[in-house]
Length: 294
Image 1 (cartoon, rainbow, N blue to C red):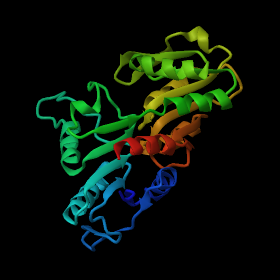
Image 2 (image 1 turned 30 degrees about the vertical axis):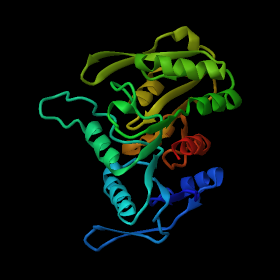
Image 3 (image 1 turned 90 degrees about the horizontal axis):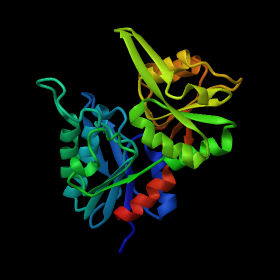
Image 4 (image 1 turned 60 degrees about the vertical axis):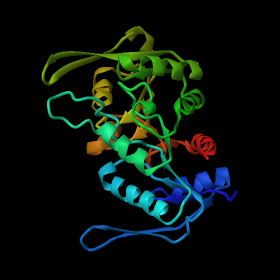
């Protein structure tokens, strides 16, 4: 059986190369450009006919990427690829998992339906599951999920002296406790008390634990970063060390990376979304999941 072909969607070349190196997969060449009216042109330079292929496309800024990745999947199937997988280190559209207000779109289900129809399998890192127990609740294709918690634990264990890990809310406690246990450090979570529309008090659930510790705020996603920003303002560091804000996926909407560093924090994210703060490499985890998917 021939080795699989990996195709990098624009901006995903580095991850695709890392996965090819780790798995022995072959890198294919995909031509993409925009017509003057902003429509997408797509052509497979490397022939997918009779091959199993995988598209590598992290889905931050998904509205710019989904139509192209769906075109790429449809084209591969149309020219004879045998199986088509998607490696999406960051999987978007997991937030809206129910209809909170009358008339709202439950977009997580709609995107799951589109991707399930286009692909034969999906590989991703730490999808933002809230009310879903797993991706199988909404995806009808095999999904392979890997977890970056061990990478976070190892980074803290080897690089931070006298750390305490702080989760963003009570719902994160189970996840944060695992990271803390593997790192061999204590943890706490944040509690919020709202005193008005614009007045929210944030405190650590176990305030005595943070005394004399280096604060390490950990979350699966940093988007607007508002909770971390408020925590940095309201929870004073009790050592001379800069607080650290870590996340699996660094989306950094509204220049939140600059706001967080401006508030005195050091930022560390994984390379599920390419960014200057990438300090955790998930390619080994993805390569292992890719081998199972194939």
